[in-house]
Length: 162
Image (cartoon, rainbow, N blue to C red; front, side, top):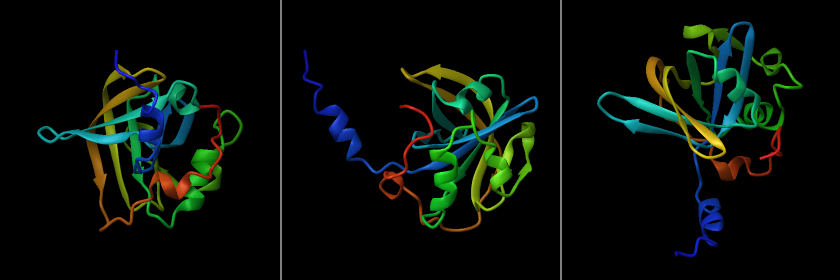
Protein backbone atom coordinates (compact mmCIF):
# COMPACT_ATOMS: atom_id res chain seq x y z
CA UNK A 1 0.00 0.00 0.00
CA UNK A 2 1.58 3.34 -1.02
CA UNK A 3 2.13 6.05 1.59
CA UNK A 4 -0.12 9.01 0.76
CA UNK A 5 0.77 11.22 3.74
CA UNK A 6 2.82 13.65 1.60
CA UNK A 7 0.07 14.19 -0.99
CA UNK A 8 -1.75 17.12 0.71
CA UNK A 9 1.51 19.07 1.19
CA UNK A 10 2.65 18.33 -2.36
CA UNK A 11 -0.66 19.51 -3.85
CA UNK A 12 -0.63 22.64 -1.67
CA UNK A 13 2.74 23.52 -3.22
CA UNK A 14 1.12 23.77 -6.66
CA UNK A 15 0.04 27.24 -7.75
CA UNK A 16 -3.37 26.64 -9.32
CA UNK A 17 -5.01 29.29 -11.53
CA UNK A 18 -8.01 30.92 -9.88
CA UNK A 19 -11.31 31.74 -11.57
CA UNK A 20 -14.74 32.98 -10.58
CA UNK A 21 -17.51 30.61 -11.62
CA UNK A 22 -21.06 31.93 -11.91
CA UNK A 23 -24.38 30.24 -12.59
CA UNK A 24 -28.11 30.74 -12.44
CA UNK A 25 -31.17 28.57 -12.02
CA UNK A 26 -34.60 30.20 -12.09
CA UNK A 27 -34.32 33.42 -10.08
CA UNK A 28 -31.28 32.14 -8.15
CA UNK A 29 -27.81 33.51 -9.06
CA UNK A 30 -24.61 32.29 -7.51
CA UNK A 31 -20.85 32.49 -7.93
CA UNK A 32 -17.66 31.44 -6.20
CA UNK A 33 -13.88 31.49 -6.45
CA UNK A 34 -12.48 28.17 -7.66
CA UNK A 35 -9.06 26.66 -8.16
CA UNK A 36 -10.19 23.49 -9.92
CA UNK A 37 -10.84 24.44 -13.55
CA UNK A 38 -9.05 23.11 -16.61
CA UNK A 39 -9.35 22.35 -20.27
CA UNK A 40 -10.07 18.64 -20.64
CA UNK A 41 -10.49 18.24 -24.43
CA UNK A 42 -9.07 19.98 -27.50
CA UNK A 43 -11.38 18.59 -30.20
CA UNK A 44 -14.12 19.21 -29.29
CA UNK A 45 -13.13 21.99 -26.88
CA UNK A 46 -14.27 21.23 -23.34
CA UNK A 47 -13.60 22.61 -19.86
CA UNK A 48 -14.28 21.03 -16.50
CA UNK A 49 -14.94 22.92 -13.28
CA UNK A 50 -15.08 21.22 -9.89
CA UNK A 51 -17.34 22.80 -7.25
CA UNK A 52 -17.37 21.94 -3.55
CA UNK A 53 -20.55 20.15 -2.48
CA UNK A 54 -20.66 22.54 0.52
CA UNK A 55 -20.77 25.62 -1.69
CA UNK A 56 -23.91 27.66 -2.45
CA UNK A 57 -22.84 27.78 -6.10
CA UNK A 58 -22.83 23.98 -6.24
CA UNK A 59 -26.46 23.85 -5.09
CA UNK A 60 -27.50 26.35 -7.76
CA UNK A 61 -25.42 24.64 -10.45
CA UNK A 62 -27.17 21.31 -9.89
CA UNK A 63 -30.30 22.72 -11.58
CA UNK A 64 -28.52 25.07 -14.00
CA UNK A 65 -27.89 24.66 -17.72
CA UNK A 66 -24.66 26.64 -17.84
CA UNK A 67 -21.68 28.07 -15.99
CA UNK A 68 -19.60 31.18 -16.53
CA UNK A 69 -15.86 30.79 -16.00
CA UNK A 70 -14.08 34.10 -15.42
CA UNK A 71 -10.28 34.02 -15.54
CA UNK A 72 -9.07 36.74 -13.18
CA UNK A 73 -6.11 39.01 -13.76
CA UNK A 74 -3.63 39.36 -10.90
CA UNK A 75 -4.93 42.88 -10.13
CA UNK A 76 -8.49 41.60 -9.51
CA UNK A 77 -7.85 40.58 -5.93
CA UNK A 78 -10.96 42.38 -4.60
CA UNK A 79 -13.21 40.49 -7.01
CA UNK A 80 -11.53 37.28 -5.88
CA UNK A 81 -12.17 38.27 -2.26
CA UNK A 82 -15.85 39.04 -2.98
CA UNK A 83 -16.45 35.63 -4.56
CA UNK A 84 -14.09 33.71 -2.28
CA UNK A 85 -14.61 35.16 1.20
CA UNK A 86 -18.39 35.53 1.18
CA UNK A 87 -21.11 32.93 0.80
CA UNK A 88 -24.15 33.27 -1.41
CA UNK A 89 -26.07 31.87 1.55
CA UNK A 90 -25.54 35.26 3.25
CA UNK A 91 -24.58 37.84 0.61
CA UNK A 92 -25.87 38.93 -2.81
CA UNK A 93 -22.45 39.13 -4.44
CA UNK A 94 -23.92 40.43 -7.69
CA UNK A 95 -25.18 43.60 -6.01
CA UNK A 96 -21.50 44.41 -5.35
CA UNK A 97 -20.10 44.07 -8.88
CA UNK A 98 -20.93 44.87 -12.50
CA UNK A 99 -22.49 42.06 -14.52
CA UNK A 100 -24.96 41.24 -17.27
CA UNK A 101 -27.05 38.20 -18.09
CA UNK A 102 -25.44 35.81 -20.56
CA UNK A 103 -26.48 32.51 -22.14
CA UNK A 104 -28.62 30.30 -19.89
CA UNK A 105 -29.18 33.32 -17.62
CA UNK A 106 -25.58 32.99 -16.36
CA UNK A 107 -24.28 36.16 -14.68
CA UNK A 108 -21.31 37.41 -16.73
CA UNK A 109 -18.89 39.64 -14.83
CA UNK A 110 -18.30 42.79 -16.89
CA UNK A 111 -14.90 43.60 -15.38
CA UNK A 112 -13.33 40.23 -16.22
CA UNK A 113 -11.79 40.45 -19.67
CA UNK A 114 -11.23 36.75 -20.33
CA UNK A 115 -14.19 34.47 -19.80
CA UNK A 116 -16.19 31.53 -21.10
CA UNK A 117 -19.84 30.61 -20.73
CA UNK A 118 -20.43 26.92 -21.25
CA UNK A 119 -23.35 24.55 -21.41
CA UNK A 120 -23.23 21.90 -18.68
CA UNK A 121 -23.13 18.58 -20.53
CA UNK A 122 -22.29 16.24 -17.63
CA UNK A 123 -21.64 16.13 -13.91
CA UNK A 124 -18.93 13.89 -12.46
CA UNK A 125 -18.49 12.93 -8.82
CA UNK A 126 -14.99 13.80 -7.65
CA UNK A 127 -15.14 13.19 -3.89
CA UNK A 128 -16.08 16.33 -1.96
CA UNK A 129 -16.29 18.21 -5.28
CA UNK A 130 -18.42 17.57 -8.36
CA UNK A 131 -17.07 18.20 -11.85
CA UNK A 132 -19.21 20.14 -14.31
CA UNK A 133 -18.23 19.36 -17.91
CA UNK A 134 -18.74 22.41 -20.14
CA UNK A 135 -19.25 22.85 -23.87
CA UNK A 136 -18.17 26.44 -24.59
CA UNK A 137 -21.01 28.58 -25.97
CA UNK A 138 -19.58 32.09 -25.64
CA UNK A 139 -15.93 33.12 -25.34
CA UNK A 140 -14.60 36.59 -24.64
CA UNK A 141 -10.83 37.04 -24.88
CA UNK A 142 -9.40 40.51 -24.50
CA UNK A 143 -5.71 39.78 -24.66
CA UNK A 144 -2.95 38.29 -22.56
CA UNK A 145 -3.76 37.39 -18.99
CA UNK A 146 -1.55 38.15 -15.98
CA UNK A 147 -3.22 35.24 -14.25
CA UNK A 148 -4.37 35.33 -10.63
CA UNK A 149 -3.16 32.17 -8.92
CA UNK A 150 -3.63 30.39 -5.61
CA UNK A 151 -0.56 32.03 -4.08
CA UNK A 152 -2.17 35.43 -4.78
CA UNK A 153 -5.30 34.57 -2.77
CA UNK A 154 -4.11 32.10 -0.13
CA UNK A 155 -4.81 34.62 2.64
CA UNK A 156 -8.53 34.89 1.74
CA UNK A 157 -10.63 33.09 4.34
CA UNK A 158 -13.22 30.93 2.53
CA UNK A 159 -16.87 31.94 2.77
CA UNK A 160 -17.71 28.38 3.89
CA UNK A 161 -15.91 25.51 5.59
CA UNK A 162 -13.71 23.45 3.22
